[in-house]
Length: 250
Image (cartoon, rainbow, N blue to C red; front, side):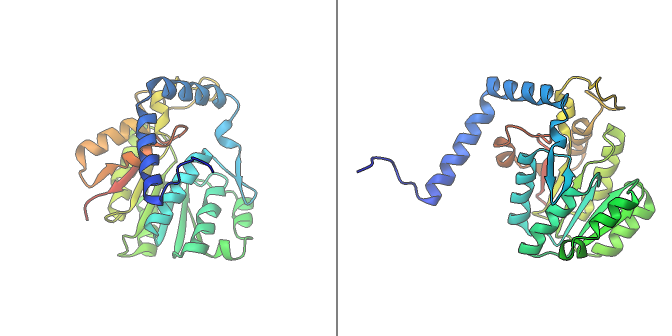
């Protein structure tokens, strides 16, 4: 007869939380994981995942973290700023097809016509998608979004567009009021603060000027949001360290 311990679900959840907390305290492991991420970036690692044939420019572990958030909070609206190739919009729509929800809004300064056609071709998954082409911080863009969500605050927002501190801070200020108590505002690519300047992919952002520095500034001035530390603890590989914010005030 096996001596293997059989955990109850409650015991297993406690074990997972304790293990994740210990993992995030293991600085050597964290440094090794960051080194892997930095080296793999030279090979476009974060661009290698698809959903329903469309690329998702994010790590699978981050997408599973977002899945956990959506399952737990059941937002009626998901707003993604930064559409890219649209794979993540289809990912959210797949989850909404199972869990319920009203609409997914994708915002980008440029959305190619062929991408619009592809995203419109996924039958039920396409029915929930609304694309808004324009600057994420433009008054007209915000007006269109507000006309869709109206007074609803059962909203999840994922900011993943232009990554300078000034731009992301403006997005945080503009989009955070849309998120109600218990729902999430996700600030993407905070990892930029922890990695060397990407000379292989020159960008106007880098250490000292990026989403993480914008987030730090935002959290100093806004007490409605807190970092979900429990979620953050278990993300060994992530593009969004400390970027998963939970609204803790109405």
